[in-house]
Length: 428
Ligand code: GDP
Ligand code: IMO
Ligand code: MG
Figure 1 (cartoon, rainbow, N blue to C red):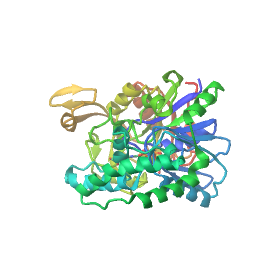
Figure 2 (tube, rainbow, N blue to C red):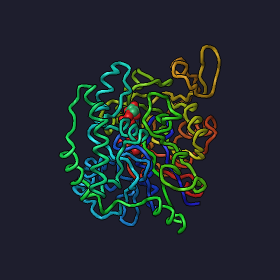
Figure 3 (cartoon, rainbow, N blue to C red):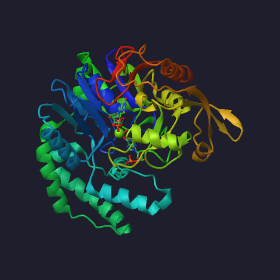
Figure 4 (cartoon, helix red, strand yellow):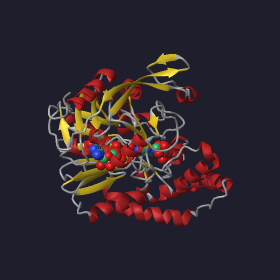
């Protein structure tokens, strides 16, 4: 029992980076399996703060193998910048492996991401404008370039030539600047030189690690509600951030996934557009945003705030097999008179406990709440469940009861030390 998936169970930014970093201390391998630098994972320990986008949260321990798997879309320039930043912060010794089958994010993907959003106007998705959607589109359209292609100059040039035939036509339709084959080719060959030492077949590596019974942590980016298949389509990202996508996105068999830890805030946040039934706009939302520093790591946009939505968590658990929860940012709710959990939705008079697939119906869902007494005591230094104020304990117990999922961990501050383990998660 040594393979665990850490998955966001809301709309992203649940604290996956913090938990992955915490659990990485007992892992042999940490794997990012989807997404790209649309992710922003914040980690704090020993008084330092790190913001990871593409790099797995096991990078701080030189004994851990960090893998960027085939399901990712990787902007080589952004990756090299991230490695440079880590170097400036003193992180120079690490093990990094990049899948030769991962997709390359090209500058035209970023241009198209922005242009499409502009065209959609007030119907825009609110993307991070990192080219994620257009890069995955090209993968599905079979004109995407792969990281491994960078290692073969002639092959890469011919693939880029083919891609540019199509992409330059598309760019001109949007009135955007077209790309010159030679200069783009030369730019990417420079990145290739620097990334070459890390590129390999990560499926082979992972299967070898599985044979050795290594402890492997799969670190999701985004969250289940942003899943292309099971999220609030079309207001989603272009990959599948849930545990069921791990085997395909990593090149391992489904039977090797043992446990799924869903990461959830003690409330809910969302960046970007799209429906959000438990969203609140009042003074409480403002307090939570400021106390929790709820501003996007990647885009600095203020995050939208809402109460904990158990319907969302149950949906995430249903589609991806979450069997334990980590409840994050519990400290942020301290001081509120009362806290709420959404248990059901009222959809035009019908009480439901599932998420309608039709966006229009989802937009019409009115949350039905159970309300609990808040707590005023500072909880940021507690180290056990028992030290929590009674009302806070009752709130966590209510989350367990309403979602039907056991809480294995909770978190009372951004630092690695402010993490309380209730149950062994790797061997749940
Ligand atoms: P991720 O994308 O899921 O890794 O989450 P982000 O890093 O984007 O956002 C989570 C934010 O909450 C970060 O700024 C973390 O440092 C912070 N954080 C994580 N856990 C806690 C916690 O328990 N309490 C507080 N106050 N902040 C936390
Ligand atoms: P982490 O890993 C929160 C959101 C964007 C937008 C939608 C599509 O830090 O939790 P995209 O650029 O992916 O095409 O944008 O998805 N989004 C995130 N929201 N956290 C993230 O990552 C996100 N990555 C994408 O805001 O609504
Ligand atoms: Mg984030």
